[in-house]
Amino acid sequence: MLIKVDQNLYRILDLYHITPGNKRGHVQCKLRDIRSQRLIDYKFRSEDDVERAILDEHQMQFLYRDGDLFHFMNTETYDQIHLSQEVLGDSASYLLPDMVISVEFYEAEPVGIHLPMTVDLKVTETVPGIKGATAAAQVKPATLETGLVVNVPAFINEGDVVRINTDTGEYQSRA
Image (cartoon, helix red, strand yellow):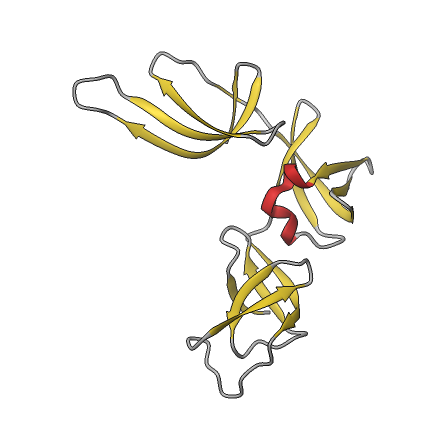
């Protein structure tokens, strides 16, 4: 969720409602500033007013990466925008060319993206698989085509396509 505090946009990362004994309750939040990417801790009292930021979502196609910039094209108007690595954060590790995703806008400024629950990525580098290994046995690190490194079961080999959960960054299955 995005909120607006003192003309700044913040994404809520963690939220704790604290009610100490005979004192007034408050909400302790860990926030990330959308524009500067700083992490801050903020304590909201019951008297504080917070405005929820209304976001517009547009379907956009990921075109290519150019250094720290990721270029997207609106699938309806064909307008192109670019987002930096800081805005995307960990989501950049799951982007493949020609992937269609939802991009969040606040007052015509792109502030983030929504990924699908899972993505299928090809394994580009890992140690050779062990014949007869089961899924519950051991895990090994594997480098995927986007540069993301995840732990996969021992039977996964180079060239295999694996399904990765975008929320946790964990291996789910072979695709």
